[in-house]
Every structure is written in structure tokens, then in C-alpha cells.
Image (cartoon, rainbow, N blue to C red):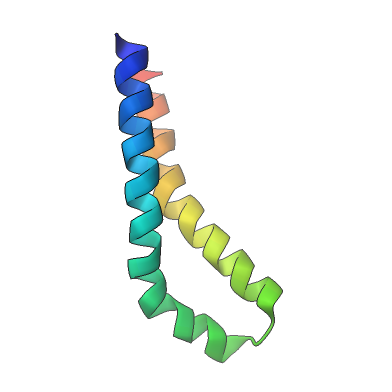
Length: 66
């Protein structure tokens, strides 16, 4: 039963964090664009942002319940 809840909450958080990424990126994107015109740097910044939004809570979940 715990595995079921972990999977369901994990999927919900993955979708929510993906949507939150675009909310955060609306503010952060122009700053990154002003710093660098390189698409590689912009993609790396977006990936890092997503990892922070999704990865930190996922890491905490695993530490607490794993």
C-alpha cells in the first residue's frame, strides 16, 4: 500500500513540478536569456531549475520514508 501511495504522489508531484517549472521559468527565463544567448546554457539552466523543483522534495521524501 505504501508503494502505491508513493507512486501516485510521485506522479502527481512530477506533473505539478513540471507545471511549476513554467511558472518559475517565466520569471527566470528572461534573466538567463540576458546573461547568455547560448541555447545550451538556457537548457542547462532549465534542467537545473527543474531538478531543484522536483529533486529536492523527491530526495526529502526518500530520506524520510525510504
